[in-house]
Image 1 (cartoon, helix red, strand yellow):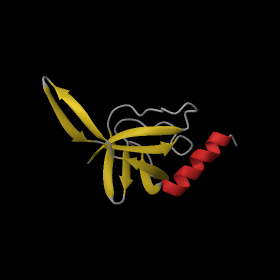
Image 2 (cartoon, rainbow, N blue to C red):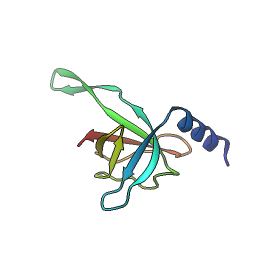
Image 3 (cartoon, rainbow, N blue to C red):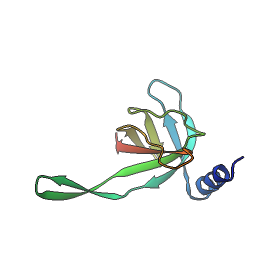
Length: 102
């Protein structure tokens, strides 16, 4: 196992929460996710609006190909993936999922 992969697994074990990932038209899979809820400033003409976002990180080893429309259930709340998932880390070990409540 690569050192970075082991480190990611340790972070998810320590800071992650249990969730259920359900691909559109597929079967549910139990995963661990890390929740991030950063505020985002969106420009609209000369106006800037502060809005809340919901992002979840999931290991690529648990979810190989997340797609828009797939669902994630965290703490009893259902979310749907909106937009294309991204792998932002250099080793491409973690997907970042932009979601909205269903």
